[in-house]
Length: 93
Image 1 (cartoon, rainbow, N blue to C red):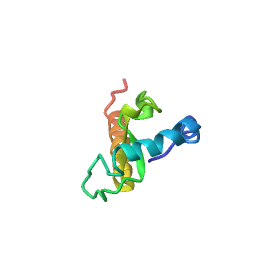
Image 2: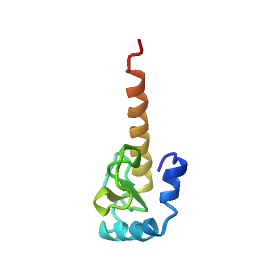
Image 3: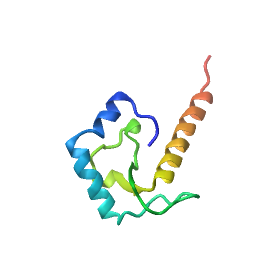
């Protein structure tokens, strides 16, 4: 899941998220939809396809997918690395 900021953390504590999370896991058959290199297949997490930090809709079922813990962490780490690399490649004059 990665590091959550205060505003993002609150989303996961709402009744709307508590209702959406099990619905997404059921919809996807508790099967990981990411299928990373070390995927465990059994989904226990819900991933936002468009990250909240990039303006993704927090409670939109079409912006969510079931994920195993490993793939969700792996994808979050890849996103973080991409953001950091993009920051290093910016020119400052």
